[in-house]
Image 1 (cartoon, helix red, strand yellow):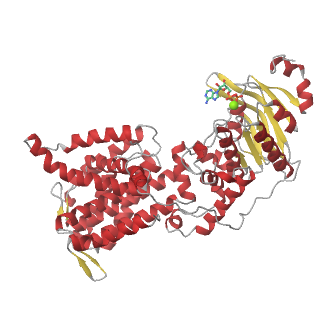
Image 2: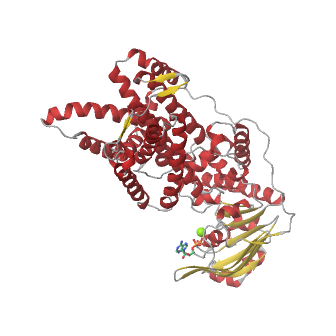
Image 3: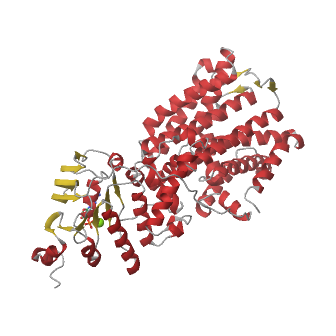
Length: 586
Ligand code: ADP
Ligand code: MG
């Protein structure tokens, strides 16, 4: 079966729905559509971005109350009220985002509960919003002369809005900004090192999720034609999150599946459970609680991935289109000093991990930093690349002080790095992982990505990722999941990712660990070639044959300090090194 066929069947059924179904089911589908729009925001925010919000119902309320108030008190056009509602929601979301997104761990969801509750009580307590009775007499929506005064007519607007939002979200995820969003779950450190502004990216998805909720609220208000605070409370916020999680929080279609399933189940349970228990009550809540625990235990990914496996679709041939190469930075001439570390000191509490460190790297040379485990090499890398700033001392890159800059800014200036403990997104393809490295070489934003107006730039970014992958010898694995590669190749993937940023200085933390002999040889060959092109390379590596065959100069560290420096053959003979580092093996 072609991948498109199930989608076309779905669209056909959707279009026929109001003509074939009784009123009750049309209403049910309308609500499923409205809930799906909110759940879709949570797919982006929680499922993909890893930020949990219990407070989305409050944004639905903002959309509903904005139009409810403006259209009844001031007879503003509902469409203008939508724009005003979106603007108000955007301002509120930016303020709340600014306050809560800085919170980490459990504090973020707690923060969303707090503002979800506050907005809910605000709706109920403001006199001009009708208090707990709410607002009535909200006008019928008119669209191009048509009055949408029945559920059957409204149906098309709701589902068009949902499908539009799903398409925009899907487009966004499949773009440069989308990769930045997906990289958030990796913890931010890697993304920042690739030049992604993670605070900005988090704010963007928070904003989009809030705006989706607002649109759903606006539609809801004109469908119901009255609003009161009840549907915007915290328990509904929890239900939205539940829908996204059950459906498959990391998938656009998960929102629809989750909203559909929960809405239908709720309807059914509300009918059947009171009969079973012989008294009325919200028994479905208990059922949903148990179901959530089961989903979290048995099917973390939700229902959507499981549904996909049931329908055998043929994947199209995946290729990366040819595209014009991205512009490159001007490389410093060989011999230029790229990096200078002066008297650097790094302290973790009482532990001095780096002390009095001095070193330099020139364009067109391989400088090796060696030393026993715990000597402080990775710490030095983190100081240089801005991941973890020095306690004191100076770091200059291309002649300028960078020790107070963020890793993002340092990456922009042309420093690329890999991590000793590989940091990649295991379920994302090798190609897309590497394309994150090219983040700073693109500029198209969220809007053009949602509309897929950035395809030319995107093609160039992906072509660059492919080129770098072929260069490091991973050209066969473009569409494999990155996590399926052996650890050694994951390290090589990180080199391709670093190269994608078009750096002039490359920091490689144990790149050869886990590689087989032949793979090490081709890595050495690659590094020689990069050096001959004028790249400066700072290399941490334990394999002494590898280091000594490649390095132009070597710095030896022990207990956080430099104990020797020189040409490979000098260092190898240095008695201090033999004694301290090699433990007098020879
Ligand atoms: P190497 O890379 O040479 O093996 P590291 O730079 O990883 O050494 O570690 C140097 C020392 O600093 C070790 O004692 C390590 O435990 C300590 N260290 C590294 N990172 C941190 C940190 N974030 N917090 C506290 N101690 C750390
Ligand atoms: Mg290390």
